[in-house]
Image 1 (cartoon, rainbow, N blue to C red):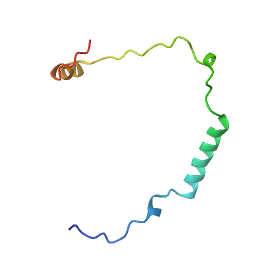
Image 2: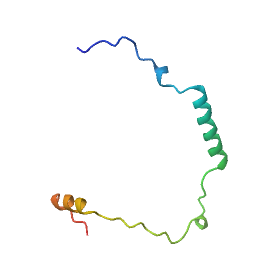
Image 3: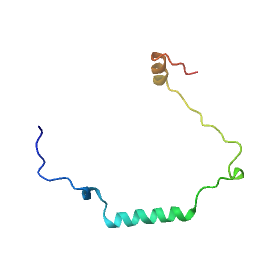
Image 4: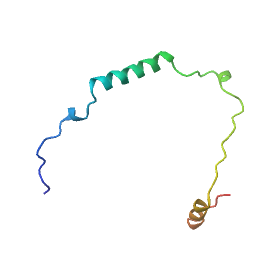
Amino acid sequence: MGPVPSRRHSSYDEIDTPADMRRDAAVVARALRLGPPSLEYDDYPREVVKREIAVDEAAARLADALHLHLD
């Protein structure tokens, strides 16, 4: 059996300070006032450019070792 801690852990030990909680609440309140994102089709671009994903040499060697084929 391990050593017994000298002090018990309280559920209140992890609570932020009142100033931090007030700041967090203000951020949430501002975000809620913005409203939800639009679900309208016209609000989104029709052509979205896909990012280029580069596979470096180390990843290619690892894939080859695992018999994965990244072409």
